[in-house]
Amino acid sequence: MAELKNITSTQVLQTNSLTADNIRISPADNITWQADKAVITTTKLGQTELTTAKSVTSTELNTLGGASGSIQTQLNGKAYREGFAVFSGYPSSGSFTNNGCTLTYTSTNTYTLTLGAKTDYVIMGNNDGVSDGSNLPRIYINYANLGGNLWNGRTIKIWGGGLVLATNNSASDTLSKDWCVTYPYIMSSDGTTSKEVDDFTMIPRATHPKWHTFTYVNGTWFTGDDVKFYLGKIGDSTSDHLPVKSSNVLQRYGGAIKIITETANGSPDVSNNTYYDCCLGSNYYGWHHPKLIRLQHNASYCTVHIRLNKIPNSMIYFSITLSAYRSVIIEQGTKNSSGAYGDTCTAVQSFSGGTSGAASNNHKFLLWSDSSGNWSWDNRLDFKPV
Amino acid sequence: MNIVIINKDQSDTIHEMKKSLEDSGVYNPLKTIWVLDRCTDNSEEIAMKENVVYIKNNFGEDRQTSRCRNLGYEFVNGLDYDDTLFLDADRYPLTKNLGVLEESPFDITLLKLEEDPRDMLGDFNNYYGTVYNNFFSCGLFIRKEAAAVIENFYKEHQEDYGESIIFPENLQQFWGVEDTHLGDICYHLGLSCGINEDIRLRGNFDKLKLDNINILIERFKYRDKLNVIW
Image 1 (cartoon, rainbow over the protein chains, first blue to last red):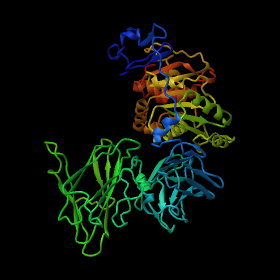
Image 2 (image 1 turned 45 degrees about the horizontal axis):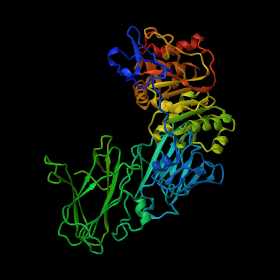
Image 3 (image 1 turned 135 degrees about the horizontal axis):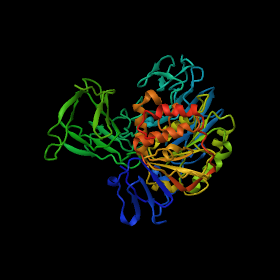
Image 4 (image 1 turned 180 degrees about the horizontal axis):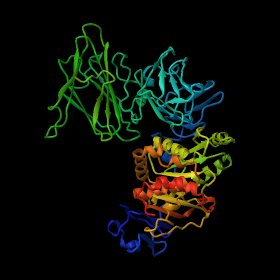
């Protein structure tokens, strides 16, 4: 059914789906309906003015990017927005620099990408999807300038059909010139074996190129079109259990949920049976303020509930670090009939800190939400359904 | 809105197109994509100089207009799903009012050229003479909801349309037919279509060159499978 509104004298409507019953026209529009023909004409000229669309201003761009002040990011040399680097083309020599990121030509069809400290997201285009085995673009990630978890949550989005995203300085391929890969794959650091990401399949060269999204989470590159939002960046789990301290890092890890059991300094931050609403906001790709949760050092037991809103197409990552002789039970449940949480929870997984060592037992978890906002566990990390 | 511009060796129009979009207030660098179709001129150089986002299609020997429009559509909508305006590189808007498209009441709105005699008001019981039967895609604005309907149609008819997304790639080698068959599909799907008379694109309109019966037969092969009253 078509709903008509704001029809001007200068527009002509044609559709095969209109009948007198399914058209809604307000009297003020002064539009006549010719019942014997499926044609609508206006009889009063200039009755309705169309609204000119908002122009894209620098202010709106800033809002879009969540940045303040002037626009800072660049598109191959010109300003765009902070935290966001775009490379529309590959350099034929030298390098492109964009918002602290650098894409450097290494050799034929080979490039090195060096991320800037504040870059959350990189977009690269111009792999046309018809590259063959002798002409397969390879993009190497330069880890040199960033250490540890500063890589966490970084997303690279690459347009193309055939490409290799490698993590070190050597890669080889045996692809036929008549085929290209649908999903990029990541070469291991020694360049001798490949770690396939999702479905690694060969397709005819004519097939459309596509977007390929990679998100780095604690040492692992995740890929898939469903990585649209990355929520819950987490600090360094090996840094003596301390919460993220640097204000810069706090910004980088906006949206973090950090659960620290048995804090090293013993200062309790929460009491038993505390509830935390994980209100992952919708501002700027769902980023929100960090949630840092530390549990009481010497509690005999301590329960923390994290309540997740329904958020579509999102991901939450968290980890639990255990010392020796400590254990954790993960439960999940839903609201009961009175709206309270917790009493319908059931155990879904348990872990032990072992019998030796301190803070050596780290477990990582992922949760995904579908298009309806319903959450489910991802068993690619430590979570294994029982 | 997202904007897709296909460019076949038309480097001299990139600046004018960008300026025109800016003047209309609809230009957003990451929502506007130039698709360079096997260009042999300096289009890529100019695109970089103008600092626009572009992708390249190096595939194919025949016409690749539908493929390029589809690739551009997938590129921009993969970043930010939105209504999409399709333009040809040399048909840049002469008027500064593209923003009015945001208020268009139609699922699909067609734009006119400078001198363009097409009115195409017709009786819907007579398909001949309607917008659908004279569809043209050098200036086409499509609502994202309508685009989703068309995408789904192609997915259900992959044996005929292959990887088509919005424009039928199976007919792209025939000038004028890929457009009109998209009109057939829109009619079949019950999508509303209209013409905006206020926006004018550069260039003039020549009579559709559809007098080649062999080309028409190619279109009819697919149209006859649709619910289109002739």
